[in-house]
Image (tube, rainbow, N blue to C red):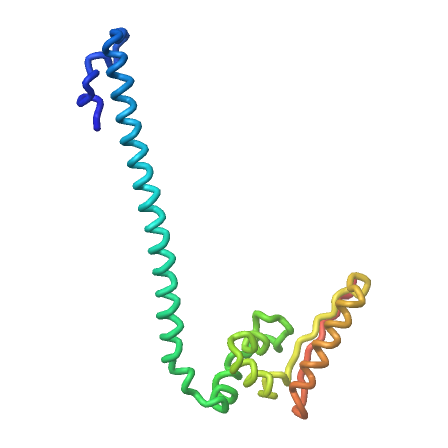
Length: 173
């Protein structure tokens, strides 16, 4: 719809006043045009709803496909002993002993899946090195100190009877 197709084109963009009869026709024309606009808006809303539903369903299908593809991942066929002896040790940091950060191995390995958690927690060599950072004691509350102590104790227990290598950093100021 463009302005040139308007039956009132001769009045548009002018200062001419519409006659009484033209005013009645303009009101009726506007009513019909506004109704057409409302119908169009309703169709757009319906199509947007349909599009959102399709997008949601599509995302569910993508997720479904992804989860089923995971079932075919070659790593799922590796026996736990191979994962523990051949894969996990290569995940440990090489520049420094492991820390108690969950973003770094061995803790990150326990967050992948239930099977990896079990394997990692039972692979003693993963827990035979540790970097311990001790912040300024006055800045630590008792709960935090207790959690750190328990975390270090757990780490050492997981190493079993293997020798432990650790580094210690103490905040001095």
